[in-house]
Amino acid sequence: MKNDNAALLRTNQLLIYVVLVLFFALTVVPIWLMLVNGTRSTAEIQGGLSLLPSTHLVENWTNLTNRGFQISQGFVNSTFVSLSATLLSVYFSALTAYGLTMYTYRGRGALFKLVLVLIAIPPQLGLIGFYRYMSDLGLLDNYLPLILPAIAAPSTVFFLAQYIKGVIHPDLLDAARIDGSGEFATFNRIMVPILAPGMATMGIFTFVGVWNNFITPYILISNKNLYTLPMLVQLLRTDIYKTEFGSIYLGIGVSVVPLLVFYAFASKYIISGVTVGSVKE
View 1 (cartoon, one colour):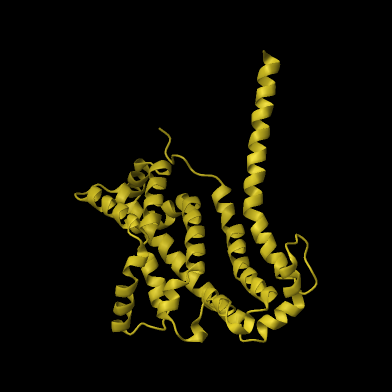
View 2: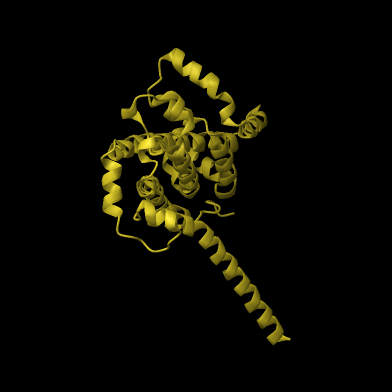
């Protein structure tokens, strides 16, 4: 009987490893192929797939930079917009979630339901009205419409509200008040460090979403000096680049690298551990 249980356990473990390897391959292989194609020539790419890098990286980079692809400017623009929007979104979403969960007042339930309703509304429905509103305010060709709306992030508020319920005990707030800590001081000095793993998680999703956002900058920005990196990448699809597939893949690969770096930096806050209950019962 024990041998049968041990064999069943090994079989289950093997199946789990097989599934994990499959998911790993589905995630990593497309990214690897994209990076590999950035080192191959157009003829090699048209000849079929390859898992091994080629020797045309410098050639593709030269083609990329000599034809108006201002990669350094795109990096600066995308980094500024993405970091600014991420910091505002995560901080104010955490503050909103904190107010929805740690305070008792009339209408709190209605506000939380409003957050759920906003999650269900596709943001693309308001693009036309948003464009006209920004035009009336004179904010076209400006980064403010790309940054300030990130403060209102209902999905981030919902996630952090559920996270706060799991990791913060209401007695911690009462203890801080007894010690003379103000409300904002309590949030910034005590709650934010506790919420760091959850905020880092949503920070990753927000940063990736803002970095990859193409539609909103495309309808608001016409000045090429203000183009974000995804907007510059779409320029590679013009007639000039129709045969330079290696340069196209290299440009796309370059735009993905910052996302990987940001994830590598922020992921340590996720796996660093979660504080479950700050007050011992």
